[in-house]
Amino acid sequence: MKALGPIPPEFSAIDGELAIGGRRASALVKEAGDTPLFVYSREIIEHQIAGLRKVMPERLNIHYAMKANPYGPLLEFLADLVDGLDIASSGELEQAREAGYLPREISFAGPGKRDRELWAAIRAGVTLNIESENEAQRALQMGKELGVIPRMAIRVNPTFELRGSGMKMGGGAKPFGVDADRVPDLARRIVDAGANWRGFHIYSGSQALDAEALIEAQGHVLDLAAQLARDAGVEVPHLNMGGGFGIPYFDKDRPLDITAIGAALAQRFAALPEVLEKTKFAIELGRYLVGEAGVYLTRIVDRKESHGTTYLITDGGLHHQLAASGNFGTVVRRNYPAAIVTRFDDEPEEVVNVVGCLCTPLDRLADAAHLPRAEVGDLVAIFCAGAYGASASPATFLGQGAAREMLV
Ligand SMILES: *Cc1c(COP(=O)(O)O)cnc(C)c1O
Image (cartoon, rainbow, N blue to C red):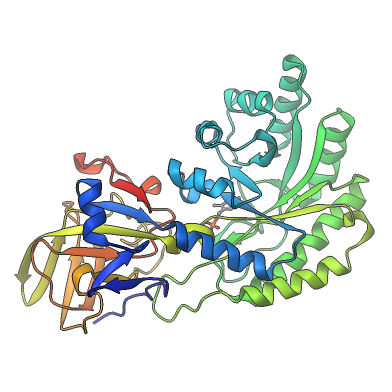
């Protein structure tokens, strides 16, 4: 038997059946028309953001990193709840504009921005988080050609990384950002060229559950930003401090202590160096805002035995939930939280392997999971499906196609 991850505490049952947003999961599937279905809860997203606002210094803006979940209705819903949006392509820019975000609330990072993407972003008035000297040059040139003053910040490849981070994105050689030692020169060049200088973007990692590690990283970010600004002799109108706030996916994961992070940040904000006194600060979060609010619902198509192992075979799989299958940046596969929808409150009775419908042994949703008995036709819920699910999985693999999505 292998443990399942912790079901987010906001979920409960109606007459023993999993409810999302106050409605039974089976009713939501009926409304959507079919499984597999991602359901995202407004209530949980709101709760998560309100919890953050309560403990973070008021001065800290909260941005949404839309690559976590670009579903249109969810993006629209978030527009009123966050202070800014971080995008990583001109495709995301279009989706963001459709969802009602203003260009001045949007910043665009990404190591391979094509000319037409830079063009679209500059013309719209989006802030570019510049990832190389070459990109800076191209953006400045395009600004001239367009007759638009580009809004430019520099994404810094920091000299440190977030301890315990799920995905390391800082420290040492990286395709992301400009190495810290080259940033002062580039910052001066951007300012001298007459761009609308916005400041720095320093992102050091993701999926951290250790508050001390995040506090340490944020401290380093503030120190580095101040140092770079002094070395360059430039101001820092805006500092995107990165994010990295994790959520509990697996057994023994503990929720992040955001109160401790908020308190430490408030202390730092109360004693800022002069170069950062007028700076506006933001953090950029993806999974922390939306990850726990999503549930992936899939139906059992077959139930069979093989050499003493019971398989529940579903109509879903890694083509929608690559991360839950253990194939999205994890070294050792562990079980996401999962449940049998109609028996949400029941005690587990049997050990089963829940798998997807794809012809590959990689398509696993829950290994040796201890669950109530389930039959063909029952629904399985995989939790923590609100981030890096639908849009981060190979939906066309094996001709399957996209899952349905719904915001409730
Ligand atoms: C992916 C990414 C994020 C969001 O990461 P989460 O772990 O979902 O919070 C934020 N900033 C940058 C630069 C990213 O690449």
